[in-house]
Length: 316
Image 1: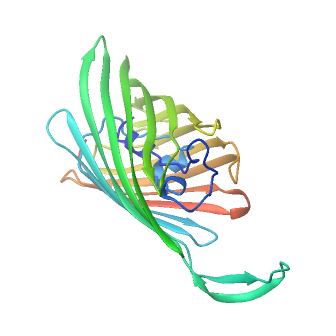
Image 2: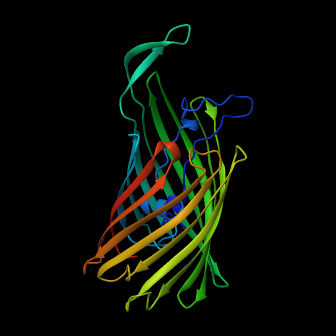
Image 3: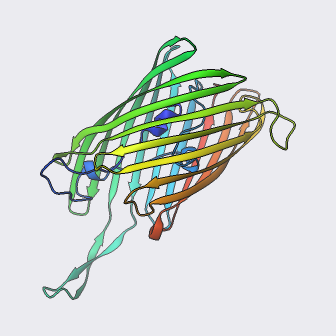
């Protein structure tokens, strides 16, 4: 789907160390890379179903809040550079609340508190999409992403970088219906003194614009999709999502979005997650629009994760 919205599929996952190195979760960049995704993608089971191949200028701010206190904040901007190239730049910050550091005696008994501790991560990524060619009704593009992050833990600082590559294809099926397929490999990189995880993603989605929607007399549309992931740890993740909108996102006035999905995440804090969300876009005569989206996802004993994205959008 593109960075636009396939770029939102560029999820940077925490991984395992290289062969022969014991995993030590949370001590290196390669094993603790904050994952920032929009509320639109979160609400559809982790799939980026919306606005494939979009061309408008977009500025967005996203926040992700966990019930336990940690928060992600991200800013992003994207625009086309010529007819076939599109770039997106993002910056993000993850921060945990300040907590007391506890100690224990040699026999394992509680030894009281000793100061406080807090963890922060910040970084950014740049994504580029290049349209390659169109043939036999198919349209093809490639995507690359470079990212970097600094992780500040209570007793050390780590940093690192990664590269990801992917591609997508789209075919018109007639009647304002489009089939899109995408694939992504990465992140591949080093940080914290070690190499770290990669993943492979493959997915597909069907989107259709309707002249007359359900229960309304005006235009509408829908999109449904499936996605699978294979992690280096030989874990299998995957998701399914659906989106329905009332209105025309390219016309003046409001458009309402309803989203639902599910994601299976082997050995996660919540191995099966049912998600949902909604959003509204209001477009003015100038062509610019203001959009707000919200989504919620369960994370097992850690409670609910709330996603919110606010953005300004130009015409596609």
